[in-house]
Length: 73
Image 1 (cartoon, rainbow, N blue to C red):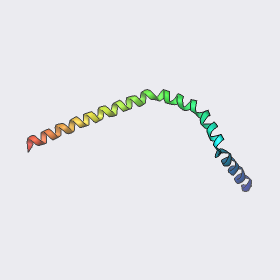
Image 2 (image 1 turned 90 degrees about the horizontal axis):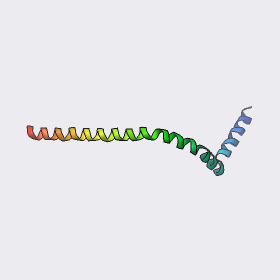
Image 3 (image 1 turned 135 degrees about the vertical axis):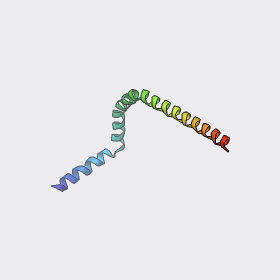
Image 4 (image 1 turned 135 degrees about the horizontal axis):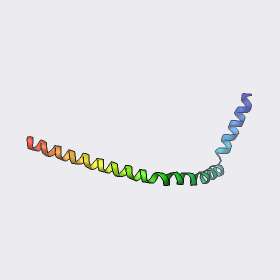
């Protein structure tokens, strides 16, 4: 029983490893991925903006700390 299962599994893997099947699968999934990315783009941009703002705030805090330590020395 397990040999039939193993043979079937290896045949399926062989079929999926063929280049033409891979290309067709990519063509089939491309519209779905494009649709998902289109819905996610605003959140990606917001995340990038928040990261940039956080970086600028941390950089400002670092500069203020450097100024205060120079005054103390």
